[in-house]
Length: 258
Length: 312
Image (cartoon, rainbow over all chains, first blue to last red; front, side, top):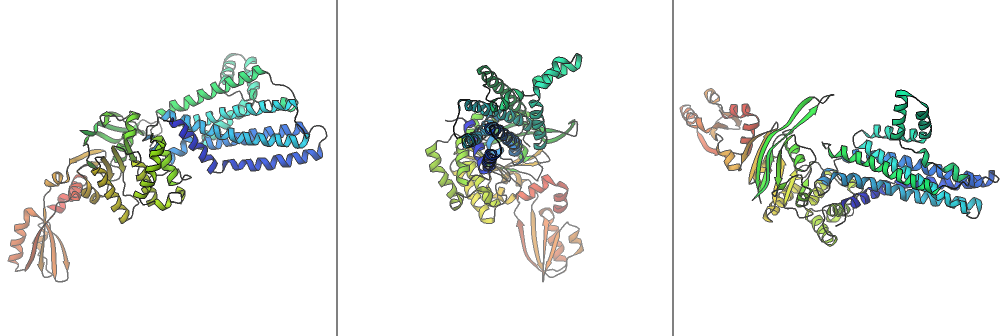
């Protein structure tokens, strides 16, 4: 018997597809096509830099918006519409439901990112007429963006396990924004003293280190990414997400579904 | 063998801004349902029926007490493979078709692929949705959703079926079909536990009923046992349009229709009423004892003042 997690994840993916979430790919395709044609006409020598910057930033923004706006409804919508009643009257545990929802949305984002990544490489081929060795680093940057999505999905799921969709969106987006400046927060924590220092240090560990996962500028300038950073970021993203999902499970396990 | 055993199950919600104000939803409830019974859980809105069902399904946590289903703790996920549940006014994933929804629920209940292929068309046919099996649920009417809900509740061939207001949203034909289905489930040896506030359904179907009011169990037993203790009423009909004033004093409910008068009166005072009508030289047409119904018992439990006034 296949685990309920798989079936719930598959249904979450199916819901996203049928709710036309993947239609964002059409907008992305138009953006990349238009951007590549425009860049080819107006820039000299920096076409690759512009396409990589534009493409990866668009992937990141599209994905974060999807992660937050689907993530906030993953649990709350099921409670509000009472679809959970017929799930939990079956041999499905609450942690399996949360895990299934997480993997379903993460899977949706991976598929979405895969097609957007194809779009970026298509645009690169259009402006440069051939691929170069350093384009492989673009793949690493896309991988890091996926890790960002996984963290934001887990955080959104965590917030949606106890708060309203609007508050969940505000919390998750705020943490994403603060997380993009996490290097500055760490710098401030190192420089500050006393209670402020303690608070800043605590906050710098709590907020997700999105900055470390953003290598768009480096790969746009053909700079290689160290293997150690790939390992560190993978471990960090998986651990952070696992903790957020466990937090969601702990809260949801105790919740009365009125 | 006992199919469902509820032992002192109770629920108190914390309300108010600081969640310090307790609100009692269900007083300690003790109910035992035998295997193969159709058991009716009756009560007006807000009586605690749905709260009880939600606790048994693990949706809401009880404040105290316990329960077993088929001899196993009700919280055990394994026991859930053997139960089916139809929530009140069910809502399902509206982007799925009826067939996809049943397939999804079948997967979650651990029904094998081949078995799902066989059972799903059979069930859709049984609930009258064979022509809508590939239509997305967002296009379904309330009655059609109720039918899908019933299909998903019995899809995995459960031994115990919990139905929360199963007739809700159905037309008379649909209600009849659900009643037939419940009887069929009983014939198959399954236990049916259903909540309703439609007393005629309960009276027609149930082996036993429990009456809940304001979170408290008011009575439990077979319809015959429960109604045995009710004071009976008789209907007296006579020719004419005059209602003697002293008859009103006996608590009679009188209705004048054309040249006949129909009076409903407690059987305790029927002899006095007949003597009185004879003295007035009124021509009696009939004296018929009225059947004691579950409704009388229900009203007696839920609104004791109302029934004693009417029946006195």
